[in-house]
Length: 395
Image (tube, rainbow, N blue to C red):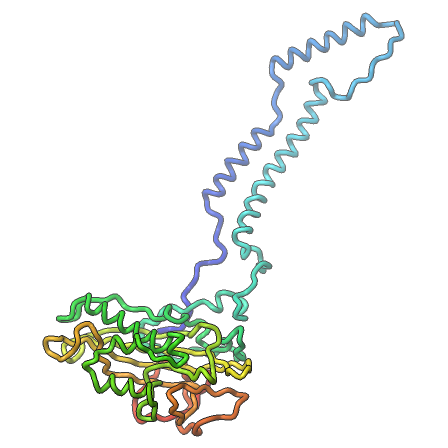
């Protein structure tokens, strides 16, 4: 599965044809309305009568030395008025042609400022990426990736930008990244039973890795509740690990927990990427397979503003078994596999928590003895061979 962002619609849409057609009709109407009109017959008759009256008055007053009274220029209906009206009409036609497209342009730009070259109104995405496209979420993962995510510009994470310089910047936020496939019947297991198992698997993932209380070290009660109590050995070991953690019984193998006295989550977002699949298993039931990576930005509680990230990848399998053939509780999950890989958690510390390392603090735990790996690389297998604590190439 490629890690390329999903394509987004163009940010420069063309003005719809119906808008231009309406503009043309309005322009033609305005031009007709503003064009000079020939005086009506009634107006011409009044004009002729006024001219005759004026001529008669001049003839009667001729030789008497009577001064002609002052008359405002152009007060009559005549050629001078028509000429002035013609000039005004031409101006109105020019403004009608220029004004409407200008109005449309202003309206479009008001609704879509990005149409202006350079988009002076754009304020960025708040992540320092310089544009929304750089922070666009990736399409959901539907198959195993074939390579690690591409390198990104090295940036120091901050309280405002805790995922700066991380491939997880474009990953989904929290539960939005846990996308369930469409349920179908598998063998004797009905579609509804498969759907229920998928929903329960999501509850397990969310409560174990994304619930704020679990992250702060609380008991993941909802995750434990979807597991079959008849699987007594497994469930007993999980409960023991939460109460008295040891190297053998380590709750972080299934639950993401941090010591609330030492560190806290920066903000409320945990980045998430992975997939859920299901298929018929060898026992005649259905196996729900989950493979997810979670990225936690953290800061110490001592007042420091230095941000460190811990990356956790989990591969968990749960089964739906036929109650007619196996001693199981109908409607609950049987946990059959859970493997984990940690990026930036102190080696050899078994206090029941993940323990992020900060550059400004002295290293804790045992020195790493394993190989250098990329914690963002979801193309490699985990859980094979003896577990070792290695070095990560990036966080």
